[in-house]
Length: 325
Image 1 (cartoon, helix red, strand yellow):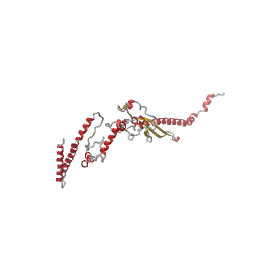
Image 2 (tube, one colour; image 1 turned 90 degrees about the vertical axis):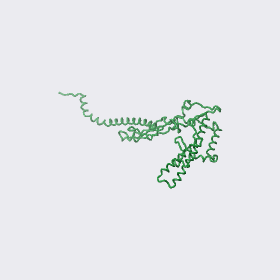
Image 3 (tube, one colour; image 1 turned 180 degrees about the vertical axis):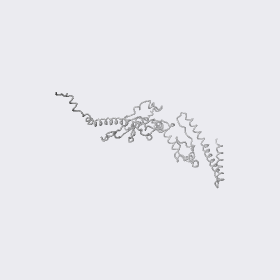
Image 4 (tube, helix red, strand yellow; image 1 turned 135 degrees about the vertical axis):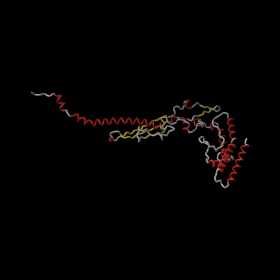
């Protein structure tokens, strides 16, 4: 009896054992596809991280920070990555879009007599000067398949308004300084030329030795060599951030006031108090010198003469102070 084989059964017998061979042949392709998926996914992650760190670069340098004390994000950006920032140049804005807003620039100020308009210094509050660009870049090896000869090399930049905060320290003056000179184009020689000329002439009359014969005698008010030698404090000009207690120049009060007479009277009172303040300063120094002389062991050979001279100075100053009005 003759057996007949079904055609489908014959096909299965011919392909028997080919599955492992097909797996071996397709496995490199599958591994390559998996590696490409990982490479592409990692590249996307590095792109996002580079963009985020370009923002981090400019924010960490926002005034008053400089970025020097802010390290790169830990475990987020590779050590080889670079962060930086710079002013946006050229600016994407041709001009400040808020330059004509009254709420930003303030009202128009007009002189009541001449009708001259007090111009605003536009660059002071110009937002285009505050644009900063943060940059971030990486050049990182691929996580797989290094023989491709490719790297994750990305550069991103982000523009952020992070420059001008318009705070008094950033603008270079303290709380007692007037804002008008930096916000308005106020020039005295333009609006009041006669007053400007008189002011410059008065300033020259005070500072020019040829016109002011009393200039050098006034040095005792803040440059007396004996006082500064004893106290060990070198002369420095008076400034807002350092009070020079060895200076007895009468200060002029800051601020604006229509009552000029009260300010003049106050300044005259401070001038009249200068002799007593200066005498008290010398009296204190001579008393300190006398106490230091009495504390010397052994005393100097001419201690009696020095003591008598100091005591005479103390007595003269005490009598001078008692006779002041």
